[in-house]
Amino acid sequence: MSAGLAIAILVGYFFILVLISIKTSKGADTNAFFTANKEVPWYLVAFGMIGTSLSGVTFISVPGAVLNNSFSYFQMVLGFTLGYLFIATVLMPLYYRLNLISIYSYFEERFGFWSYKTASAFFILSRTLGSAVRLYVAAQVLQIAIYDPLGVPFWLSVLITISLIWVYTFKGGIKTIVITDTLQTFFLITAVAVTITLITKELSLGFTEMIQTVSDSAYSKIFYFESGWSDAKNFFKLFFSGALIAIVMTGMDQDLMQKNLTCRDIGEAKKNMLWFTVVLVVVNLMFLGLGALMYIYANSKGIEIPAKTDDFYPMLALQHFGNFELGSGGVIVAITFLIGITAATYASSDSALTALTTAFCIDFLSIEGKPEKERKRLKNMTHVGFSLIFLVVILIFNALNSTDVITAVYKIASYTYGPLLGLFAYGIFTKRAVNDKLVPYICVAAPILTFVLVNVIEKYSSYRFGFENLLLNGILVIIGLFIFKKPKA
Image 1 (tube, one colour):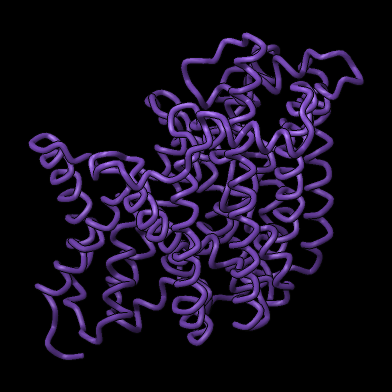
Image 2 (tube, helix red, strand yellow):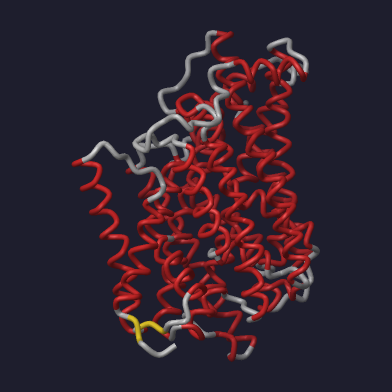
């Protein structure tokens, strides 16, 4: 694919997003930015959340990881469904009953001032790191497709990418995001479907034959019941890790819960979670199937597989299919891939930017009681500030990254979301008060102690941690809260 065509696609794509932003932000105040005035239909929220949850990490890493992990990731996806059930039946009714804007304001009533600020601070840390890493995926692809041929350095291309996100989110906020994420989810799924269709055609397979070929391949193994606890692909480790990751990265995350809180009532929010879960399972299965087909295709055509599996799908779509003759379908795959990776990552990053702005404005700047003019000024300054933080984190990750991105995202989450897991579990399932002033110290100590314990256990035993250190992290927080509890409820 030529750089000129890639630029034209990107410009056209963002032109559409800006038009949506102009339309949805007419007359928008800060309430529309934070909650969309609770007027969004549940089906738009459910479909748009797919793109936010998957992001460019799933788009790139999940198909690539099939080479080494087969379909074992689907065990974690099944665990997600258990987590989403908990969110729909326990967490969302709580948020709606308290009529929350920032979900972390729950802790001010439950525990006190310092617990509230600590929970929000950990979300801001978690989402900033996680979303910046996700955005890094799209930035890399755009660098290869557009900016390298033009001689534009990586730091400048990232700055351009973040600036484009800021342009269409700074005014409408979540009211704009719900609509743009719906469009971006459509592009994401279309890109996967088009790529699967072309590979199936190139392998001269019908639909049923394609399913059978993937099923018969060495890549299609899903369940690893027989593997020991030291195996990262063990079913029970991945299933329960998936449930916990879904609970903390969706149900205890301001980004995705902010979308749910735009629904009219708890009934519509529950419908949103149900259909979101069903579609998410199907889409993840599509990504895994695509991964198997890519490697089957590469083996049949003698295509060299990159050392870094995250690079395989972009290489295949942009360099291999993108060089097919016009009319063969290859150029369409390259175009839809470029739009798909951009849509997938921006669907995650734009809403994260809005959620971070919301959390900081509500939880730390306390703008709810301020005049509208002052609210807008503080909101805009915060929005710009987090955009610049994204830039710095992406550049640092680009210099240090040596693993597939999806592993990096979940590894970050296991340490930074652990305190949120512990705080919510203690708050919901006990009626005891805590020593509020000590909560920040407990929540900082738990991830550090988790890191030390994980390394000691792995050094002196055969056990290898996957993502279950998230559970260990949360348990340590609960133990700390219990030891330093107050006797009064």
